[in-house]
Length: 85
Image (cartoon, rainbow, N blue to C red):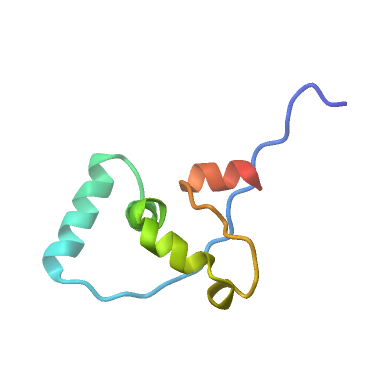
């Protein structure tokens, strides 16, 4: 048995193209700079907030007709998702 654990695998990424107002884009760039991160990370984490906190959405998502009878993923930050893989 290895003494050290292998590093977590990063989650698979998908490309999404969206259109936002210029002001939102500018603030996104500044916020990413502010937290020393990428714009992708900021958007992903911002989207995870309602996915984690909206209990009505969670209930809706858990309905078998919505998820193809698959177990819900549970959400979490990108880091948490990477740790589980």
